[in-house]
Image 1 (cartoon, rainbow, N blue to C red):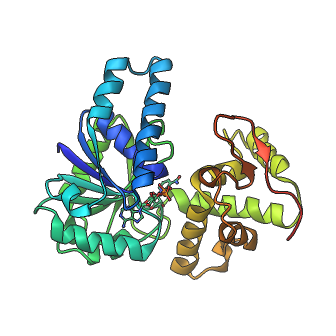
Image 2 (image 1 turned 180 degrees about the vertical axis):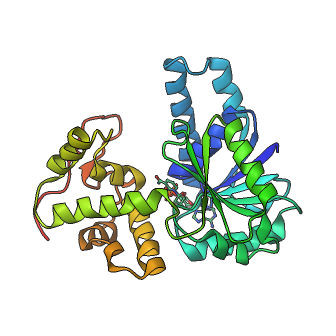
Length: 297
Ligand code: NAD
């Protein structure tokens, strides 16, 4: 396992590329959007600099890590010689199925095809490829260079050998992998997203404000971050997409996304990455300023 291709250079893709490159792998980072790719390389450089300042890595490691990353906008060129492809594109079923169909044609035999999806069925993704046994979920957490967990999701057809390879590879990245089965939301988001959705309902119904809700959960439950700030950090569009997968997958109204979340995403307030969600985000400022006021229901 030497050459890794990461598809999608957004929040997760740049973190996954950073982590593999830091551990000596050759990384091809591909995105349909050249601006996002350029921004991803800047983000990785900035995050490496932070690691240098904290004494986690030295300057030489920072330089080497950046040298290990090459960017592409053409999928075929980026994946032809990959040993492992990790798809971290937008959380949309059609986009992922289309990508995996192409990967099945472009990749060499034996390439493991992994998805970083938060909730979409690995079994359905695998079913559009020629070799479903080689398809697996490799669900990293945000921020990838920091968070220890990798949720490794076995699709219906995923082989034991592929699962073992991905478990071992995760440990090589200094992560702690946990193997789970392929049902909507897997484990992490099946538990996390209903909590975030309930926090948004609590706000929507006017029970309390943004800061009050987050403070209750931080101080009362010892969560490092409140659920509304976490939702902003994950991306409100990503949260909405995951809730829809849970809702449709289980057919249970308890997973129905809160109308306020639906509205905020429709209005383009997608959280930290768009500059505004429950809080406002200004480049260079770490202050938490509430963006959502009780102006509407
Ligand atoms: P994002 O919106 O930040 O980035 C997605 C990127 O994919 C964009 O840059 C977009 O241009 C690119 N893209 C879309 N279609 C593409 C294609 N056909 N080929 C190449 N690139 C394409 O999203 P994100 O938050 O990084 O999420 C990516 C994946 O990771 C999703 O499946 C999401 O569910 C999952 N995930 C997200 C988080 C999180 O905290 N945000 C955590 C774990 C897993």
